[in-house]
Length: 119
Image (cartoon, rainbow, N blue to C red):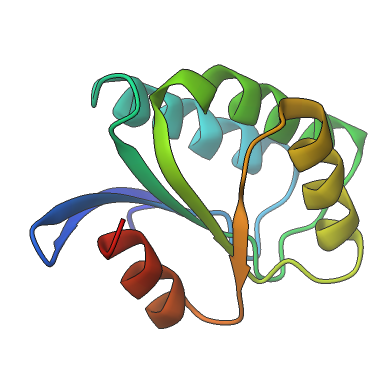
């Protein structure tokens, strides 16, 4: 299954980043692929949905996510996260604080995609 995918929804391109049920090096590899896709879209053009449902977090993953978010900031028009609970939610709040980015959270992909498609 493809972990980084560009999907057309309501005429908008949305980058789907699927980190669900991943950990460690796998998260870092997916984020690296996502950086390449997002940076090709141009400044303030990217609509990104990241699914972190069941992802396992450690210090390496937390740093990779912070770096990913900082790197992508110039390219982001809208960013949504699905599945951030517990430790994931705390990490997300930290990333939002450090990057001063708005990252909206949702309980499912459908709601997140609808929100992004209407930006």
